[in-house]
Structure formats: structure tokens, C-alpha cells
Image (cartoon, rainbow, N blue to C red; front, side, top):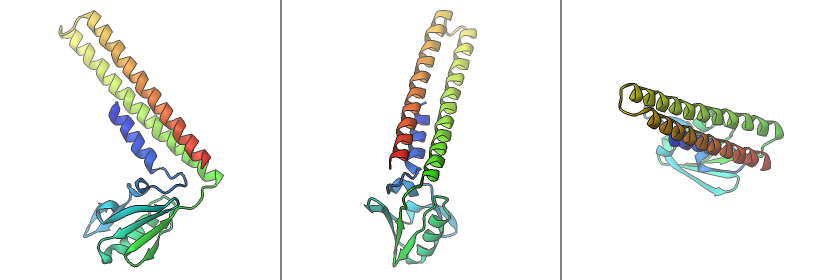
Amino acid sequence: MDGALESLRKEFGGLRTGRASASLLEPITVEAYGQQMPLNQVGTISVPEARLITVQVWDRGMVKAVEKAIRDGGLGLNPQTDGQNVRVPIPDLNQERRAELSKVASRYAEQARVAVRNVRRDGMDMLKRMEKGGDISQDEHKTWADEVQSMTDAHIKKIDEALAAKEKEIMQV
């Protein structure tokens, strides 16, 4: 359940809210040396200003590939090359894009909720098997089932809180 929450936080970090963040470029991979590599393995990502991300590419021959990967990354960014540096200005968000980002955040949150519920289901199935096998009593089964349900409720509440915070951040900027 903690893994689902952590995964959600990483996905939320990649959602662009109008402020520059190095995690924004994390999902981007670059065709380098005959294979796909994460962007942070071909250059240094930094955020010198609130609306600018820079990527200092280590290999001069990879600059065009990095620029193309960022442009084709589906984030709506338009990088500019400056020698071995790739500058990525972060444009302001319009209201339509904010609504779209909010929907994406909701989708990510729902995926996390489903993952938490799947963990709960697996835990309940294991408890049933243990009770049938005589490993635990009926009272222990009930106690553990209540514990699993309370953990599930707590994690879903955290997911909902994270979603509300992210939606507020998206609409505020």
C-alpha cells in the first residue's frame, strides 16, 4: 500500500503545474548509444529559475537527441539548444490545460486506489486460507481483517489528500 502511495507521489511530481521541476523530465528517455536511456543518465538536469529547466548534456553528440526526446516527450515543452546546454522554458498554463492536468491527476489517484484495494484483497484471501488451514482462529481472522481494512482506509485517505493538494496546486499557479 505504501508502494502505491509512493508511486502516486512520483507521478504527481511529473505533472507540470507551471513551475519548473527537475522531476518533470524524469519520464523522458533518450535514444543514446543504441538504446533507450533516462534523460538524467545523459546529462545534468537543473532548475536555475522558476520557469526554466536546463539540461547540460555530457556528450556533445547527444544534444540533438536530448532536444528531440524532450520535444517528443508529450509534455508540451519546446527546448532550445545553447551549445551543450538544452534550455527548456516552462510556459504558463491556460485554463483548458489546467482542467486536463486535473483529470490526469484524478486518473493517477484512481490507479493508486485500485492498487491499494488489490493489496487488501490479497491480504483478505491470505487470511481466509490461513483460517481454513487452521493456522489462525476465527477471532484472529476477524481481528486481522479489521486491521487490513483500517490500513486500506488510511491509505485511501492519504491518496485523496494528495489528490486534493495536487488539484489545488494545478488550479492555483
